[in-house]
Image 1 (tube, one colour):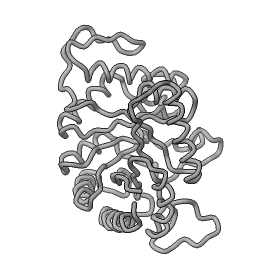
Image 2 (cartoon, one colour; image 1 turned 135 degrees about the vertical axis):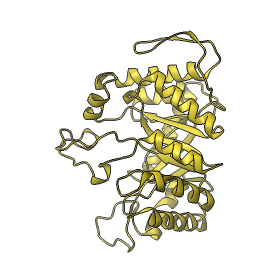
Image 3 (cartoon, helix red, strand yellow; image 1 turned 120 degrees about the vertical axis):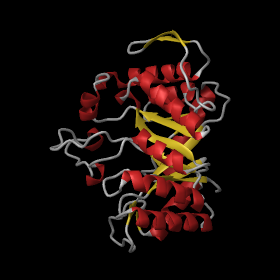
Length: 310
């Protein structure tokens, strides 16, 4: 059941980003966390014109008001750490120009000594797509494919040449290059996404919801599909754990997975860890008031998880 453990960085509005991100990153690395993660939420529509995840009338959580930009957050963490990998889960790739995104990731990887892990997805917010102005929401899959193409081209040897729907690179030197090939993690929510993951990605990035049995079945599906398509390279696997922390145990009948105190969160994590994914990272922002509480909680969760054999 041994697995790597990671921690989400503070990005939400209760934190002082410039002060707290480096401090939490440094402390997390000292505790033993092997990776640090960010997510992307570009805006909070008020009033909401679309439900959360596109589900009608499902409210957006207040936690999404004022989420710090993910690559800036990772850059702050990179300056304060030496070993921890720096991951996105997820970066909504079609909200970014493909060339600019490829350059930013390459520069961050070069600056951090080869520690970037690029978890990319298509997102779901119509408002974010309208604000970004890169491409229509209906073209999100095509744009993600172009981002993957442009990243491989830009990160590869010079001279770089590429021509796509959004991006045209004449023969050019594009630097800096990543310190090593940047792993790309992708979701597998649909047959098309699963095919993209197996054919073009380095790893899978699920969210641990719906129960450990469901996640285990999804992982078997990914592995079986990869075997059917003749893939021989192992697929990396990194699961996101969204928690709802409370200092006291949550004893309501409506308790959700990873809701409650440290013991409840870790006991929920154990069956997920038994699936055998490479890594699990916990987001502890929901329920923490400030960076000091987040650091203390991160230490408690790490110690309890390791004591539980994770």
